[in-house]
Amino acid sequence: MSKRFFRRWHGALGLLAVAVWLAGCGSNAASSGHLSGVGGSGTHPAQVLSQQNLLDAYVRRFVSGMSLDDRIGQMIYAQIYNPSCPPDGIPGCIRQFHPGGMIVYQDQLDTFADAKLLTSEVQANSPIPVLIGTDNEGGAEDRLVNALNKHHPAAFDIGATNDPAYAYQQGTEMAQDCLSVGLNTNLAPVVDINPYGTGRDFGTTPAQVIKMAGAWMQGLQDHGVIAALKHFPGLGGTNLDPHSTLPTINKTRQQIEDFDLAPYRALINSNDPPGLVMSTDIMVPSIDPSMIAELSYPIITGILRNELHYDGVVITDALYMDGIGLFFTNGKDPKAARFDYQLLGHIGVLAIKAGDDMLLGTYNEATMQAMVDAIKNAIKTGDLTEARINQSVERIIRLKIQRGLLPFTPYTPPAPQYFAAAQMPVAHRG
Image (cartoon, rainbow, N blue to C red; front, side, top):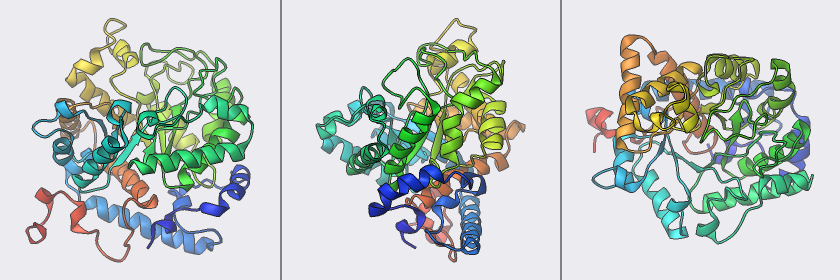
């Protein structure tokens, strides 16, 4: 089946789809396993269900053939720089750990040629296609400005036009620019409702953010790039940055429901829900007074999974940010999580227990190994189960199939090339 089979809206239908999508929040695609990615417009419900059942069975079969190392690898969204992976840089770490995703930054995308070479090397050295992304929001967070010699407008400037067709067009252009350098994922849009006007937000009201961020996201995903809503459950109640401190959102549960969660509720329940949702480092005492949001079971599983019915991929924010370091050292050492590899691994385990699927924050060979070792040890001691690991990996593989990164062959076994050579049966080794 073709990649187009897994996308609901395409090309010339884009602008019409904006209006349909904004009104189409009645059926929760995410809660039924991302039905938005299976079947086309006009598909009979029984056909959609049949296709979904086939997809689910195929994903389970795919994951059951993976080694534990490869399953854990799929849960790592790596940040890698060449000097950190001896002897041959990034390709070596990709071959060793088979991470499911990788984030790149502007200094790695300095020229078009640099960007293309990096992304092609990553994919060439991975048995399973990698979710290669960046946080290319536009404005001050424009990671492709050097590689493409162009600027993308900031989210706030797009939102100020109050024109969803323009937002859709900008999302479309962003997708085309990302794909041109080999990026298949964009860790955007920001759906924080920020009254301080940082430029990263699409507006100061839930309705404005839903309308404008939603149209931008749809333009992105319609044209082949996976979007990530962030920063769950919402940074709109603070002007503090969790990269450098640990913000606390002092709102009632109802205020959070009505304000911060509104964009997530609407966009998760749209016809094309986001491929990813990114959690973040904030304290929300009215929901969980004792744990950071992205490590909180009541917030990630209780709200995002069970209340909002999101069954897509949840990715953490960087697990070494100062906010987490301050939390785990009682305010004494903001850099602790960055340099204490054992602590970083422990945080990764907590994130999985909370309900996150992909762990962003391993930045060299040593931190990647520490994360893998911590997860394996947690399985050995019973703190995590392989069933919980499989749950996340199935979401990740399903996303890659739905978005055309992996083929869907429901009546034949997954091809051997998608598994690590060391784990393949002898008959399939090259």
